[in-house]
Amino acid sequence: MSRVLAALAALAALFALPASAKAPKLTLFISVDALGSDLLLRNRPRLTGGLGQLLDRGAFYPYARYAYAETRTAPGHATLATGANPWRHGIVDNDVQDRTTGQRVQVYMDPAHPLLDGTTEPTSDTSPENLMAETLADRLRVSTQGRGKVVALSFKARAAIPLAGRLGQAWWFDGVEGKMVTSTWYAKAVPAWMQAFNARKLADEGFSKTWELLRPRAEYVGEDDRATEPDAYGMGRTFPHSLRNGLTAPGPQSYKAFAVSPRSHDLLVQAAKAALEGEGLGKDDVPDILAVSFSGTDEVFHAFGPYSWEIQDSLLRLDQAMGELIAAAERAAGGRANLLIALSADHGGAEIPEAWAQMGVPARRINSVEMSKTLAAELRTTFGVDVTVAMLDLDVYLGGKALESGQVDGAAVRRAAAAWLAKQPFSVMAVARDDLDTVPDTGGLVEPLRRGYYPQRSGDVLFMAKPFQVVTDYPRGSNHGVPYSYESQVPVVFAGRGVKPGLYPQEIDPVDVAPTLSALLEMGMPASAEGKPRAEALTGK
Ligand SMILES: [Zn+2]
Image (cartoon, rainbow, N blue to C red; front, side, top):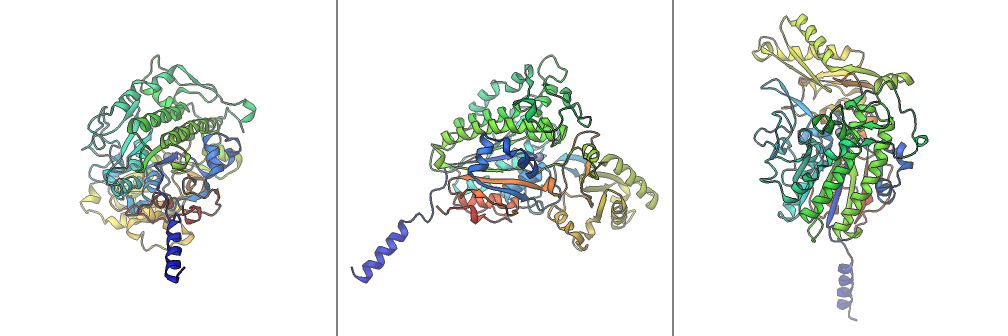
């Protein structure tokens, strides 16, 4: 063989290698609301169903950590969807203060796009208009020139909307009607498959059932009956839990109990199966995305806490439900070889502070309404004018005529508020927005505040709570929204086509999720992504 022919043969052999494989036909993107790393790891030995198998056979990163301060549902899902932090995607919290009306509104509020088939609360989430960064779903739609499909499902609009982006379909549970809904942003009419799904009335079917323990009582850790647990939605503190919430027929109050119960997992799995079939997801070679965000775990967490029997049982039942979901996705894609799966969570969560305190942890409940009133009184004393104060997690919004008219020096008021907040026993530091870029970052807690700051939407003063301080409006239950490990650390799992399985204990940032999926889908990354593909977990074929 001549040297030229040999070189050509070598070149041909090189090109025969699968330098890039075909993208998976279907990507199943799963989010488990409030599934912090610690919660997952301490329950993992009992998980032998779909969730447990996913951890075993995938690339499992137990320690991803959000790098911004307010670990809430809306920013968490927006970050998973865009690969960016709130300073770029603009979704700083679930709720923000509307500066023109002084009203607290949901961050995806869009009066121009009401619910397609339901009654819209005027301040509620309905569209991605306020999402300022491109999502994975949008990139797929653009990259495939509209051929790849995306459907996102959740009990919460603030989870489904970023997962669907501007160009997919988002569906969420309407707690008034007890069915899955979308807004006029996403559809002009409810497709037949969703009409048929809603006609099954699964939320009504749950009404006559109770939530029983899945396993023998001896398998649950701790106590079922804890005095620190509230009687949420008439469910009582102990098993079995009624889902009637005092009603004689299904209605909005019983749907609240239903949303807490693991039956909410099953409803989403059934809706996902309807979407797979109805939209023909995974059927052709053009990649599609099915995103499912399970919200029931977060409802259980808020009501009963992350150490309760209720969360243990919710995870055991999610483990089963996820098995059914993954099997359905595999069938739709024509086998496991055509399927890519990603799993993560939007945040973790604190224990009920009173329960932590009983164990000797320096935990405390900080009532944000009380604190706002005290700060308003303090500012009135100092400046002699009325300043309105609204504390939404770590954001403090100041308003009122005296500030807006310039009667008082705004920066002076903000700095005085920051100085007062910094002195409080629950606080590490506080900073006026005027000083956010220049304040020294002693202890590294200012940078997370900066990454979570979006000027048009964030507060006038930001503060950082000490660890184990639970900031909430509610007198019972628990919350999340600070950057400490128990709230900022979440699992990330990739599994299926193109993924190198294994345990990856290095700490990563959830901003890497969307870029890694982009790489596996063989397309460019979402426009504003800050993360990087996790190259160590990719097979390259
Ligand atoms: Zn959440």
